[in-house]
Every structure is written in structure tokens, then in C-alpha cells.
Amino acid sequence: MSTVPEIHRFTSIRPPKVTFIGATAIAALGLIVGSWVFVLGADRVQSQPFFSVETLERGGRFLQALLGIGSSSTPAFAQWAAWQDTARLAYQTLAMSVLAIGIAALIALATFMFGASNIMRGELAPYRSWVWGSGFFVVRAFYTFTRAIPELVWAMLIIFMFAPGLLPGALALGIHNAGVLGKLSSEVVEGLDTRPLLALRSSGAGRFQVLAYGVLPQALPRFITYLFYRWELIIRTTIVVGFVAAGGLGLEFRLSMSYFHYTTVTLLLIWYLVLVVAVDLIAAVLRRMAR
Amino acid sequence: MSLASLESSRTEAAQAVSLSGLSKAYGPIEALAPLSLTVAAGETVAILGPSGSGKTTLLLLLSGQLGPSSGAVTLVGREIAQLSPGKELAQLVGMIHQQFDLVPNISALHNVLAGRLGEWGLFKSLVSLVWPQDRPMGMEALARVGVADRAELRAGRLSGGEQQRVAIARLLLQDPAIVLADEPVASLDQARAGEVIRLLVRIARDSGKTLISSMHSVELARAHFDRLIGLRNGIVQFDLPSSQVADDMLLALYDIKGLRRED
Ligand SMILES: Nc1ncnc2c1ncn2[C@@H]1O[C@H](COP(=O)(O)OP(=O)(O)O)[C@@H](O)[C@H]1O
Ligand SMILES: [Mg+2]
Image (cartoon, protein in one colour):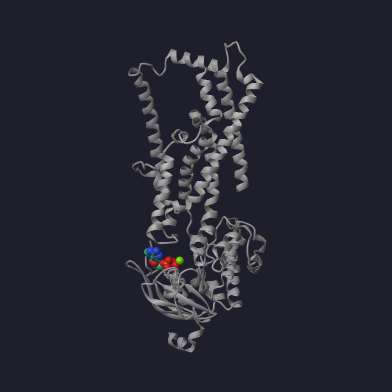
């Protein structure tokens, strides 16, 4: 690079150049200001203002109830028996999440290569046939469908077929995440460097051998990264799926809220914290091993 | 030009490559003007020329990865258009690029063994990803290119020079009659570049293979190859034994004036 344009940049007056990052920052600022204007402005329309002494008082009272302040009985999170009872639920929740990510991984792993346009329709396609090419749309439509329906809705639908329990909960989480994982992984394949793949091809590898030696090894590390990331999300989502009688900590959470057992709610939240941190740690260890 | 006499002095069978009226245009750009030449089996040929002169285009035509606009490529007596891509073509011709030939996430050994994929069925190739098949063969090739100690490392972890050596080792297993290389050492430092070119040429000579390589380094090309072909704007400027290529020919070849703009 010559230094001339450098000098030019500081001495001449040019219209400010809007970069992508700059535009993003302006848009973000606009959204923040706009949404607060909306929220505060809505005070006049709503019966309940956003900021008021009442909401603050109510919030304070709920917080006290969660902490067991002002109640005569021992809070649940200070009772050893309560911990023992809920430990079983935490274990069930963990089991549900493992089952769910297993289901998602299996479905995504079996299909993601067929959801990549370069493999189905592009330069890496084993067949140039119409049937093979349309397989891409079938797989992508499946991903969109499973991904578009939220976990909670999947759970509500599946409960109709199965008795309430961990399995339908895991199925609901698994199906939704299969779509997410599949789409992400297909896009990894679409973004792969094709040079090593074409080199494999020209050194005599058949088209399926190229998939096994070039595509899979390059896509798998990213797939595993996504897998652990989704597992962390699934652990948190079990609470939502649990609401519709799918069991585990989620169901207990809803019941405790309905029965005003607020200190149990606190205990369950602590369990969630423990689970999320544990999954985080396990995922970190496994990720390092996979690398 | 003594092309006609050269051609007649060689027998049909000893010809590794024969081009007749081969040309290539990308839309309005004529990347390669009609070209006829032959390369004898076992010959080592370097293609020289400034960037954009058509070296890569010529090599891609020779490897069958690109179809010509006119003319034909004949490899060891068989016309390339008649060969099925994949295994059949891979037995005749193999290619090394400047970079990025290897799959970065699998070991050097697996990359080398991939040279056997044309021989293996799909099942054996899948098994080999877990239990490497024909391992002694792969290790021997790695030893020949001097990186046996890197066998278990992922290819992406290797240095540029080591990666090119592994790519050469894969060619050893693929075992084509003709080896093509497109500026195989352009991404390496001078010392490494010399080593790898020496290795490539020695292996080609030892196993009687025909080697055609484009080169960005005139010195290396002159020192190690039998024959030099100078390309400029898609037109052959000279095609001579290395010893007969004079300095002024090379100066004219790379002269900026009259060079087709490339962008
Ligand atoms: N895929 C392509 N599409 C259009 N033009 C191309 C393409 N590949 C090469 N060219 C053009 O053809 C000419 C020869 O290119 P190339 O064979 O890559 O030369 P070299 O390898 O000697 O640098 C150049 O002018 C280049 O711009
Ligand atoms: Mg080139």
C-alpha cells in the first residue's frame, strides 16, 4: 500500500462513509430509544403504568415470598428433605435433555448432507437427476416445519399421543432442535471450501467417497459445537415443556406457582442454575475432547 | 520452430500427452490460443509465463477438469473426452495445486490414503476412516516425501511445505501416468520451494512419470525441468529444452508492455 491515500484521507473533506457496523449501531440505538419512548408513552393508554409505586411494591412482596421472608414455616430451600425430593426431578430433567439432544442429533446427522444445496444441486452433486435435486427441498421443508413450531407447541401436540411424561417432552424438544441443528449443519456444508473436495474427486474418489472423506470430516466439528450449544438451550427449555405435564422440574415449577409454594419455586430455580452450569462445564470438557 | 521434427522423431506409443488445436475461451477472453504439441512419456516440462497468461487454463484442460473450446487432448493414446471422470481419468492423470489440496480435518495419513479411493469400494473407504487400510503403503509414501513423522497430525496443522509433500504422497498412491502441478510451490518460501520441486521432479523421474508443472520461479524451472514452455497472453512464445532458453527470451516473456490487462 502506498501512503498517498492515507494522507488524502486526513486532509480532504469527504462525505462520511456509512459502514455496515456504523449502520448497525445507528439502527440499534434507534430501536432502543424508540422502544423506551413506546413503553413510557403506553403508560397513558394502559390501565397500569409501567413504573409505579404499586408495581414496585408488588415486586418487592413477591421477592420476599420467594425468599421465605415473613413466613412462619422453614423455606423449602433450607430443608434437606425438599432438596432430596427435587434432586430426582433435576435428574429427570437432565435425562430429558440428553434424550432430546440425542433425538435431534440422530435426525440431523442422518439428513444434513441432503439439505445442502451444493451436494444436492451444485458442483458436488452425485447425481444430476431431478429426483435427487428435489430431495434438497424436501429436507429443507422438513427443517423449516420442525423449526417453525416451538417446543411448547410440539409438546402440546405430542401429549395427545403419549401419556404425559419425560419421553413426550424429550420428543418435542428433539424434533424442534432437529430442524435447527439440521439447518445450521446444512449451511456449514454449503460454506465448505470446495478445493479439497474437487482435489479428492480428481484423485479418483467417487462422489460418495468425497462426502465421507471431504465433507463429513470438515462439517463434523462444527456440528458438534452446535450440538453442545443446543443442549444448553434445551436444558433451559425443559422448564417450558414441563409446564404441559411433561414432567421434571418444569411441571413442579408450574404446580408450585399455582399452590403459592414460592420458596419451592426458589429451590427449583437454584436447581436450574446448577443444571445449566453443570451442562456448561460438561459441554466445555466434551468440546475440548472433540477438538 | 522444430516442432514438426520433434513430433516425427517420437513414436506414437511413447507420447504421454498430445494436444491438437487445443484452445479455450472464457466468453470473449481467449485464455488459450489454438495450441498443438506433444510431451513424451517421462519428460519433465515447466510452463512459464506472467500471471493471466493461461497456465492454469492449460493444466485444467490437460487434467480434464475443464472442457476445451476447440481441439482435443490425448493422454497416453486415449482422448480425454472419451474417458469417464473419476477413476478412469485418475489412473491417467493426477494434479497438485498451489494450496488447499488436502482435507484439513483428517490426518496426513488419511489424506495420503485417499489416493487409494479410486481402488477401494465405498465400504472399504468407510472402514478405513476408523481402521486405516493399506497403511504400510501410505507410510511408505509419507517416508518417501520425508514427512513420515507427521502421519498422525491433522493436515491443517502442517506447514505449507509439509502439506505439499503430503499432496505429493497422495499422488504416489494414486499412481497416475501423468502428474500435473499448478505452481505447486508458489506459496512456499524459497528454500522450501526448492526442496519440494527437487522432490517432485526426482519422484517423477524415478517412477518414469511425465511431469508438467506451471512455475512462477524461472530459476527453479531452468534448474530442474527438461523442457520449458513460455506462455504469454495465451500464446506459446517458446517451447525448448531448458538449456536452450536464453535470458532475453525470458525477459521478453515477462515484459509488462503489451501484456493483457487482467482484472
Ligand atoms: N473461470 C474463468 N472465467 C473467466 N475468465 C477466466 C477464468 N479463468 C481464467 N480466466 C482468464 O483467462 C486468462 C488466463 O488465466 P489463467 O489460466 O488462470 O492464467 P495463469 O494461470 O497463467 O495466471 C486470464 O485472463 C484470466 O483472467
Ligand atoms: Mg494460475
